[in-house]
Image (spheres, rainbow, N blue to C red):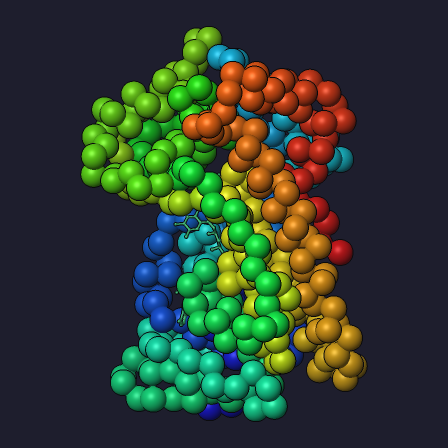
Length: 390
Ligand code: FAD
Ligand code: DHB
């Protein structure tokens, strides 16, 4: 097998890269160890930045998003028993976010790639990067058990936090930066009507809570928990009591319903740099993790591959590698900004076990500032809707 760009991973990064490359006339093959069904049903992120929405619409994969996504012009910070709105739209000159689940984005990208004759190998086992120098190659086992070798000009490692790409970079050339938070998020999906028109990010002495949505009949909610928490220890009643304790008040109460999905995600910040070694380029979660509080994970993955696709396009059309050489530095600038924002949102809203009363009051003062100073609110809004892609 031979192609121009071998892409490992059919998540948002890998599929969007393959789609953008196709539009630029560049061939790619995408490998993923999961089945199409698993990829299309795994519940993850939900908030798309304006940039991600614009890119999907401009590149022809935004039809369902335009019909089924929910455009949000603001969100609410809740603390001290009251809600205060961040007016994203007016604070950013008309930008906003759209709630549209990650697996729906993946369905749209997979459908577009397959309709255009693109090649995605699902259930590709044991992917192994054989060379990232002069003859880039990936070996994998096809679903029928055949051992295959895919040769390419470049390898794009879009294989998430636990894939082989990150490890294929020589140990002496790489740096890792990490922060592990001593808490996780307990996430649920519930059959219930929306409790609010907009997302709610709540700070409470019991811990953080987030009220999001999926559709008029399905709501997505999270609350801060111990990262080792076992979801089975939490009955529906216990979950609702915890959520109500953190967000209700001043006449506001969550509308409850049957909980049909629950799980715990750990929280960390991580950056691998540089994001290139030889002819291997890493993008998305393969290169970084953000805590989900800023809703940046998926959006950063898309921003990375936007930069990478342009650099590859320049290589193939103008014959110059300057874009590829600049890829890591260009992507990292945005990544570190997103790291800062995600850390900021996380530290403003979560309960830290070692926090003193002074720390808690300072945290409330910070929320007061970002919801009452137009300058501070604008800083939150600009980062939340996403910094421009170019
Ligand atoms: P991924 O989506 O992880 O895709 C990587 C792909 O590579 C996967 O399909 C995987 O099967 C494949 N792969 C891995 N190893 C191999 C291999 N050896 N061979 C072949 N293929 C391989 N972000 C938010 O902003 N908000 C959230 O609420 C949120 N919730 C999350 C919940 C969970 C459980 C997780 C794990 C992440 C969450 N994120 C969230 C982060 C967001 O989903 C990610 O940032 C986003 O998926 C990154 O896209 P990606 O394409 O880089 O990686
Ligand atoms: C969702 C997830 C997030 O991490 C976030 O900040 C906002 C919304 C969600 O899943 O809907």
